Structure formats: structure tokens, C-alpha cells
Image (cartoon, rainbow, N blue to C red):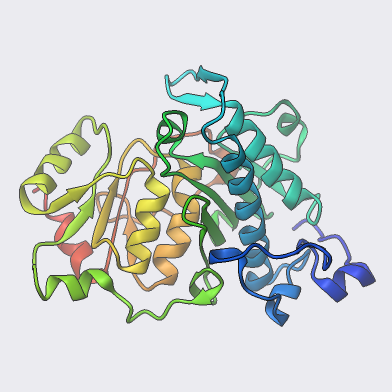
Length: 316
């Protein structure tokens, strides 16, 4: 396992990775809280708590950079898979990596967008910490001026995500979790009993689920089965779908044509909230061999335990 950089005295006093004390906090939402003792623990430590706090800081940083480009004149190009990417994606990803590298220079990265210097990094291994980044999940929304997108950051070890965070800059909402701590929204624990979808079903019992934008093959058939049985939504960002399953605002989500960076942080949120997320056949998504991962698709279903079992049979 790569050794973490020893903390200096200033880092131990203010929490490495947090804002300098002279920098004012943003008003409202995720940036409105005064710095607490747990927040000052953020830094080069390897506890799940420290990793979550760093994921929060990195996701917020990337999301704020992306927001700075929103509604601006973007340079947009097509990747090999014909999906869009912009200079905002590149800038947000660079900011996330810089935030993490400042405290954990030996950790590896798997990121959606390719940057030349990432090829020079230490290759991901299953025994080391590996950060998984989607700088803008919802790029198609973003480049069209639709304000629905998030910055997603997770960290894995042993091929399994340990901690993760999603930042929605347009709503100034930060979702985060670690395997040891449970789910947090804007830095506050989210009790498992807060389930808006369950409350809504007392009035209207038909579940509300998220579906993929352009399903193909077997996933298209499953999506059509969901359309026949449930009330369906698509927000254009898989990561946000998963966050809303974690909070209980959506009953379930089907993810198709997604990669590790689309689901790694969301998987931590969903499972930390006591819900279930597997592949469409019910098999575990993790551990995953990150040393051999090269962008293969990772379709998934996420829901509460009872509803997850129902969803697995929905396409039968």
C-alpha cells in the first residue's frame, strides 16, 4: 500500500485539504457550515473518515470549477464513443486531481477524461488507493445549458469503493458516504429512516424509478418493462440518480452504458444508506480488478433491499 505523506504541523492544526482559515465559507447549502473538528481531520490520513472528507473537498472543488464554465462559450469535441466532452470537463478533472495529489501524491487515478500527465502516474493496483473521477456527470446536459450535472469522486482499495462524494453545484448540495460512517448530505448524517419515496407511496403506491437515456440490447427490454410497471424519470446523470436512491427520493434506478467513474461514488452512497446495488442479474459489482479495468460497461440496478428483489424480476 502506498505510504501517505506525513502531515506537517500546519496540516494537523487545520486539516489538510480544507480551506485556509482566512478564506470565507460560502453562504448557504454545502458551504455554509462552520469548520468542525471532523472537518479539520481532512487530509493525508487513510481512515474512511479522512478519505470521505477529502472526497468531499475534491468533488466540491471540481463542481465549482465546472460551474464557472456553465453558460460560457465551451469548446466541445466528440470522444471515440461519440459522447461529448468539453474544456470544462478537462478543467474540473484537473482541479479534482490537483486537490487529491496535494495531500496524497502516491495514490493512483482512474478518470473519465484523459489528460496527458495522467499517463505518467503510478498504474492502479488493487492493493493501493485509487481515486475514481467523473468531473462532470451529465455533460450532455451541461453543454446544452441544462443545470443538472454533478462532480463525482470515489476512492477504492482492494477493488472496492471505500468512500465517495457527489457535488451538485447548481443546488449547492453535497452527497457523501464511507463504508464505516453511513450517508451524509451537506456534511450532516442522513438517518436511514428519512425516505421520501416511502412516504409518497402511502398516497400513491406506484414506485418512481430512474431509467437510462439510451438503453440497448437486453437493457432496452428491461427499461421497457419498467416503463410498463413504474413511474419513470431520467435526469441525464447516472450519479445523481444513485444519490437520490441513496436518500430515498427515488425508489430505484437502472443504469446502462455506464463505467466505473459513473457508479463508484454512487455505489458507496447507496450501500452506506443500507440499500442494495448489483448488476442486472443480481451479482455483486465489487470487488473489481482496477489494475485490469479499461472502461468496460458496468450496468447496475439500485434500490432498497425489498424493492431490489422485485426489480430483478421485472424483466422476466
